[in-house]
Image (tube, rainbow, N blue to C red):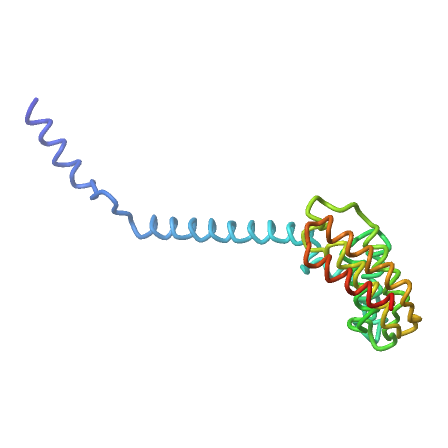
Length: 204
């Protein structure tokens, strides 16, 4: 019995392999599986990223949905951008309102066919200021200007006049005073004092 067992193990050892040893074919198969796994992983990540870009409105392959006719109908890309921004502002996007107002104030991003026009800038600044209620610290949104800064901007434009807006010191005085009160409510004491001084200068 013992002799048979010994003979069996001698034969079995002829076919045994050290731990971790694989034949060339098995190594190749594992390499192919590993490569396929990495490819699937990368493709999966790409699809996840595309989905995120689509949700966030960032550029991605779906931009091909905008045809050449949609884009190349405009000689000036900035003009197209401004029209889209105004559409967003009309739909109630406060950040778009501020960007449109700044564009009409400074002339930046308007495109070649437009020029600064302060009445429109004042209109959009006013709509942005009235769009939502102030938070406790006097700001409205994490990337928006505080309301008192917007009112101050409108006051400065009335004080200076130009670009289609008539100079109006009385209106500037009223707006600087309003901005000062808003700054005081937002616990911006130094800013409030400065705005009151600017209001007094318009009253002289």
